[in-house]
Amino acid sequence: MKKVLISTTLTFTLGFGALAVPTLQPTTVSAATVNPYNNQQAVNAKADQLIKIAKGLIGKATYSQQEYKTSYPYKFACASFIDFVFKQGGVDLATYNEDYMVQQGYYVPRSQLQKGDLVFFKNKTTGTDPDHVGMYIGDNKIIHMADSKQNIVITDMSSKPYYTDKYFSARRVLPSLLSANPATKGDKVVSQAYTLMNKVTMGNTNNESALKFTGTGFVNYVYKKNGITLGTTDIKQLMSKGTTVSKANLKKGDIVFFNSVTGSKTPNMVAIYAGDHRIIIPSSSGINTRVLFVDYYTQHYITAKRFF
Image (spheres, rainbow, N blue to C red):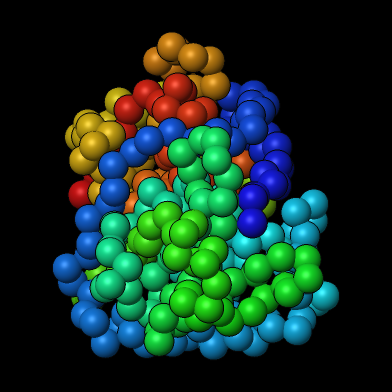
């Protein structure tokens, strides 16, 4: 059902002051391309894993637009349920909003749905974004957090007129959100960043042995662990290095720079591009993932650099 934004204000501590990120808003970005290196067998296995996780939450979670609770008793809205399931399966959508999910991966027609696809519905008569999402599990069925009466259910999409009349679109996010096979250098950088997400402490100094970093220090450490020398933990110096790449040509492992003041070309936020419009961005609360669809990142984007 219609999402409620779970707003968590992030304060970024990158050695350049405290920066507040505003409430997320949607923007239009082109779809990602499919990853040609990940075979169908791996995709099927991941989809089966995600379906098993989702089914395991039936009877253990209740519908809530006000609270997002990731431990028992779980509380989800429809999109936060999907986001949680994917994260538990090691696939980061980097969003709990339907309007951002529907822009990830690539479009598939209803007649070609396969397990793991995201299926969207639009009941509201205003706006252009969907207000409900579920995951396709095969045999014309989806698993989804339906509403406060049904909670998580498996539904045949021919069972009620709603699923025909209000059908909006479907997106295939597997394999485009998975690592290539074999993993690229960018995949390895992104994987390293994810591995460190809950292990590091963010602050104003860098101490590798204690896993304490500034934002740029964290990025420098991730690259260093993958045999790539950036040579600086200063954000201005880092932006002067590497090869400039356009926003339209970003690849996994590219470093993206932002400034909290619109129009300023002096960076004070840095992130690692994780593929399919997702970024891994350091903040004072730790390492977070977001999508570049957010107006804030469009308005405060400066440039991106490639180092391999």
